[in-house]
Length: 377
Image (tube, rainbow, N blue to C red; front, side):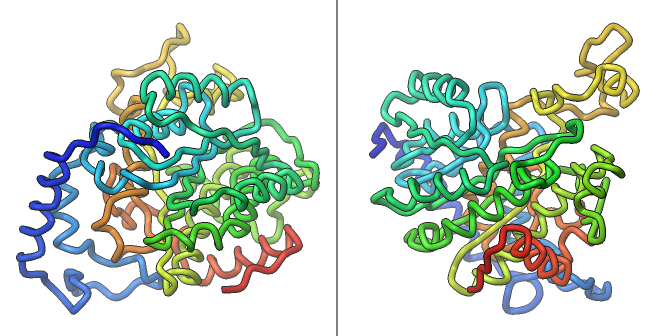
């Protein structure tokens, strides 16, 4: 178990703020939603943000908020939790999320990835920064369904629940390649791998005292493509478009959270998807420099245009903040299955198809067919 100095002053401050907010009147119906004269959208997540949430979050967190600030704010919620994160290579969002969580004394922190050297490097960095919480490592190649099953066997043997599962690992706009099962690599890794891994771990997650949360890291890139229902595997590469492939996986991440909320919300499980922001990390390494320059990310000399407001870059520290908020904010329970941007519930920032309940159910059934397993709750 990770132990360390806990910020009691912060806990008292947070508890006092929550108590004060509970005394405030809420607008709208019994669920605290602000009523709108606009017609109801086809997804239950197209709704006004609760007044209470606006008061607690919108004023506190912005696009410039860092993961460290969010983790400190939710220190009481992080303390004693068992957290598993996929995709944690140093310099990435996952590693920063893991580092800031480790500093707030979780009971355990499990780093999951496919490259042992990368995992060990991240483990050492976090161990040096938070020596009272040395992370455990989990060998997990999301592109291989057989390896996902092996990793799940290991996790199910842990003597503790998984309170928070953060599905962060992803590929972005890579050249055509396939998984061992013949799936386009982004589809197989970003969605199918996490779909299978998460569902096989549901008993472990539901055994959490608060019934657990599953966080699916998406992207504004979901707007590049809906699910390609009739050609999700691009005719085995013949019609491959790397950005459409990336886009449909990010849409899938969001629809997966919608389904988890629908199917397991009644049992207490919470799930959210999110957009971290535009962050310069190694996820874009496979994209040619000319393409990055054409997108306006880099100048003619190949230098990152960090000061270009039109691009809207975030630092790794800022880009990691929303993941931490999604995993630990206690005041977003009423928005189960929704989407966060800048640490706030923001379904209005999502394409409607990415939060559609009917599409979520259709994707669930397609995903079951692909993995050859049924998950009924």
